[in-house]
Image (cartoon, rainbow, N blue to C red; front, side):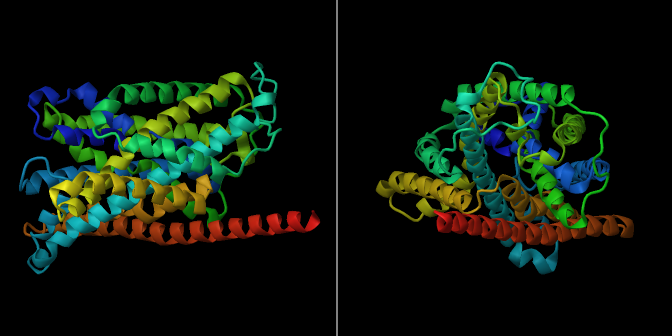
Length: 449
């Protein structure tokens, strides 16, 4: 789930039709906007739900997510108060259709933008943890890395030389990421973004190959997981499916917007297939030992260590693209209140502070699987499941909405809200439990010494 890959479209809002995309280009961008770190965490999500319940739930969530994306597009078309509306603007104009909400319609835009900020900064936190965990694993296993990718039958990367804590790796990445986000124009990152996409695609091919060729039989895995772990599945799954932020920008840039529904259904069909297949195959391959990211389970050989580093490179570049969304919402509103001579300095300072903020959050919660689930539960559930059905009800309020449609929309929003409550509670509970356990282990080792 990397919607930020598309945020550089904002640089072309007033560009001529040269920048409009064909059917195939829009499809590729839709795929790029939905495939990221969330995909790599789905095998653990399937473990939390169960070998049968997990894939079935992913399919259901995929259908609902695509339906909600379609609702957003339909509401945008119906309202059409201005061309190229954002998600927040659609919510604002939708609320203006309801007399008793009209006075507060600006809060609709502000609320959506707030959750977009939370979501995108949450993605950035996930990237810090992902980079530190994977690079740490490569460094610690460097002396034991071999050319034989079949020698390590444990499906675990051997840790032979303990190095620094993963949080210190985050601090090592911090100055480089700060330099990355200070690049003034995303156009300068275009060549690196292309390389990042190629690297991540190649890595996924190798991950699929290894997982498919190393399945052990018989498969004795739980078909249904523990009920208390299902909210963690929900958080991770909705984190992966939260690509709704790229839908309107893509449609606005398409040469033939009337064809966008075909792009949406085809693209999200492919995404859902990838999610279900890798989630299921990865869990079957690595079983109960599956990590927060499937890359952490790849064997200790140079080829698959390179796969981890390639994916890390892709995530590193993607950080700047993800970061662009909250930066463009927060910074302009702040610098608009300042005199011209302070604008550049304050803009750069805010960028640095926002990156440091995401790094601090990642350091406080250095658990990849729980960070993904928490971000998904807290913010992605609102953007992908709760808001779109509500938006349809208020946008078409004046025309009247059938009881069946109302019931369907209320059900989707309630499911999203229950997932938000349960997923957030369980993720926070697990974070506290793991931190307590780590503190106890640290104290015990200190007392023994």
